[in-house]
Every structure is written in C-alpha cells, then in structure tokens.
Length: 177
Image (cartoon, rainbow, N blue to C red; front, top):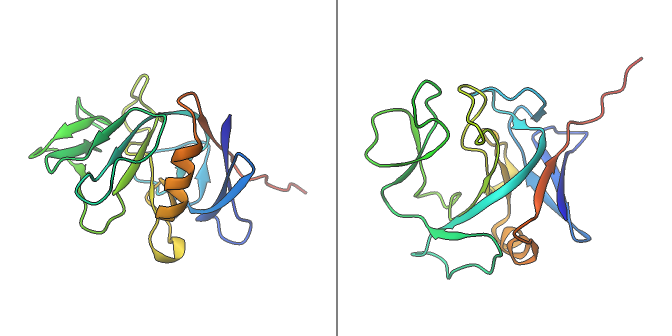
C-alpha cells in the first residue's frame, strides 16, 4: 500500500500524507514539490519511491515498531550531499571532507529518519540527495526537500507501514486556462 503525499493549495511547503485511512499534516520542501529535482532547489521530488530503511537515535528512543530494516544513528554517521563526489547521496562516516549532512543532530529532527529511495539506483550527480522522512519542526516549516511529520505521527505511521510500502509524492495539479 502506498503513502500518498500532496501539497496544500494555500502553502506549497506544507502538505498531507495519507496512509491506511489516516491523514497526517506534514512539511515539504520550502519550494514545494517538483517533477525535476535538483540538488539545492529546496523542493521535494515528485515520484513513487521505495522506503529503504529506518534510522533512529537509540540514545533518545526505544527501537520503533517498524517493518523496514532498522539501524541506530551513531555519532560518526553522515550523508554525502556533494554532487561531484563519488559518495554522493550515500551514507558516509564522519569526519568526511566533502559536503555532508550530520545524521546525529542536536535539534531532534533526525531522531527518526526514513531513507526514501530517491536518486539511489543509480545515483545521478546533482539530481538530489538526503531525501528523508523525518521529524518536523514546530509549525511544520519547510524542509530542504524532505517530508517531515510530528514525531508521534511518524511513530504511528512507522507501526503501520509494510516492508513493501512505497511513498507516492504527487505534483500539484496546475489549472490551465
């Protein structure tokens, strides 16, 4: 069963994630949803993607109930976002000299991270990296391209999804005249 993600009509950086008869508010990329994802465009990539695995902070949470493969986020975990690097859009070990995301964050946004299978089979340089489902900021402010939910909603969603579940991120309908 697919999760369906759509943008709100009044604010493209906010949306809804629907799954198993439930509807969750979520944050999207600051630039909304795009069909042509590029590194640094602040947009969430449209498309249907597999969910690769769940990463979580074991020092903050018990192991979440989830059908996906689960791994703890360690202090040395990072994710390469340098489009010209051989490790682009792949997990890396810190310290790492090229541009990267630190997976162990102080702000709690990456306490739970679902790795979305965007631009990973194969990786295309510049087509976007670090596309995750993670914990939202207060007020669901826009992300760099991820989908973010309230921690409680994300935990509930994780308990409902199956290993085969996919996420379907839909470009908003544009009226033409």
